[in-house]
Every structure is written in structure tokens, then in C-alpha cells.
Image 1 (cartoon, helix red, strand yellow):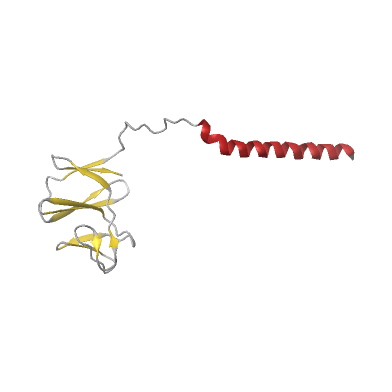
Image 2 (cartoon, rainbow, N blue to C red):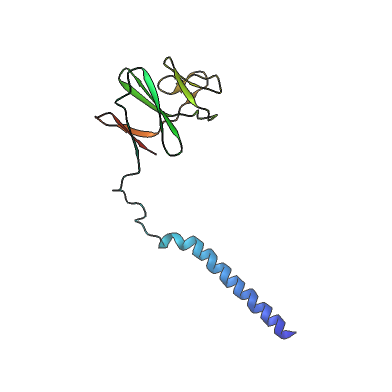
Length: 138
């Protein structure tokens, strides 16, 4: 009977030591990781689209891996938005200088603002080069 008691006591102590070691490891693991995990000199992957065929007061859609972009050209300026409504997720359409989701009755202006519902369209991080190439940084 005494041997079983000592066996249980040693198993309990081993469990406590392993648990303490695991907790210390979890909290101290951040100190042992490499600080060069993300190199700042490496550019983020991006998507490139040509805007040369886009005429004034027109729009087009571009597909990325998982999402679609809505690009509108007006007065030789560009507006770039994700092509889904930020709240409901339905597709956006460009109709007569107004951006409108197909599933709800909200209208956005060309800056992506809605005065009726105080919402704003989501725009990706992008850059338009001098040779009319849209570069999107997801």
C-alpha cells in the first residue's frame, strides 16, 4: 500500500513540474523567436492592372485572388473600392455617378461616402503609376 502511495506522489510531482515548465515555456517563447521574421526591404505582394482602356466617366471590375475591385474613372480621377458593400457584402454597381449595392437601397458618392446611412465604402491600399497601372497592396 505504501508503494502505491509513493508512486502516486511521484506521478503528481512530475505532473506539477511538467505543468510549471509548460507555463514558463509559453510565456517565455517570445524571447527566443527571431526578430528578422519580416524583412522591411521586401515589398508586399501586389496585384497590377492596366487602366489604359478605362475611359472617362466609366468603370470596370478587376478580380484578385479572393475579391473583386471596382475602379471608376471620372474627371480624369480614379476611385478604387472593394466591389462589395461593407455591411451586407452584396455587389456594388456604378450607375450615373452613383455607386449602389444591388441588395439594399443605399447610394454612395464617388468618394465612397453615403450621406443617408453614414457608411463609407472600403478601399484597398493602392497606387496608380504614371503609365496608368493600378497597383493594389492587399
